Image 1 (cartoon, rainbow, N blue to C red):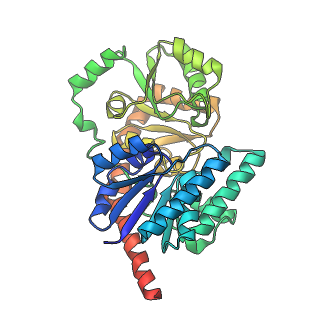
Image 2: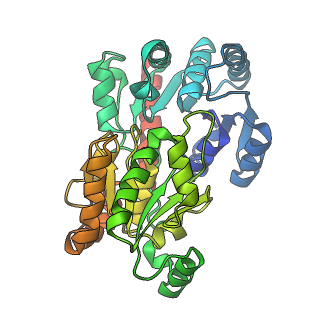
Length: 388
């Protein structure tokens, strides 16, 4: 059986971004999962029933470690002789694609999920552009997980058109709509959970799921909510995700407001976000940049209308006036008005909610995405055999 190596910088990406996909591929390939954080990776391997190999990689720019991880990956690929190396996330992408090319791996595939360089400036942006171009150059095929990213890298001439392809309608892994299903949660359990969080029956709950960092638009979200809360007392803001103080911290004033405002409920990181989506009314997701955000699909599958920023991924999942509304990124004022409309125009909000789940089921069902990826692997294999 041919070997398929899947690589991410940290194991949580293998676990969350590719949930279920590695097991699905096991029937067709010998799957090996590669990432950093050896102990966590080994536990994940045991859980999934796949081989693992740990390489020390970091999300920061660390030249000495990066060269070391590149060399280690090269040696590993030479030993294993995989047919396919498929990378995700920027650091794993550049190290994995370079090492795979050096080792002569026939099929070198990279999924492009978001571009950090879009929010970078000056020398850092130039460096990130070089990293992306190097990744693309070493890859035999690159899969942007959104049409907007596809068009951006093509427009900027980072890559040739024949190397690029969007699989399905976007996303890296789709959504399991049986798992993310509002019918899995009984009315009584939702009422009890709201009580536990000091949310009353009358409260309209805006929910955000993700890292609590600047690039996710949390500063603007908290400011917009504070303005709304002065006018509407029966609202809550539920924040589900961890603070990251080192890479992209929030403004101190935002942190202070979150800590002291009883209408804002921050619950930290949760393995299962479904109960929090189940007790909420509207997803507020004002991120500055995304690839193809799982959170927006998850919330939609749970029947929530969404307020999202006008960035790639978000503006593909959300269709204005159908399953949500789209606002400019970094605009507290526009975000405030969209949230206010959700409060005041109940018929509009309910109409968006009515369409939310169906839109996800029709376009982003998880198993359809897996089949599309597997079909692509088989197509590339067939092409490879023809060439030889």
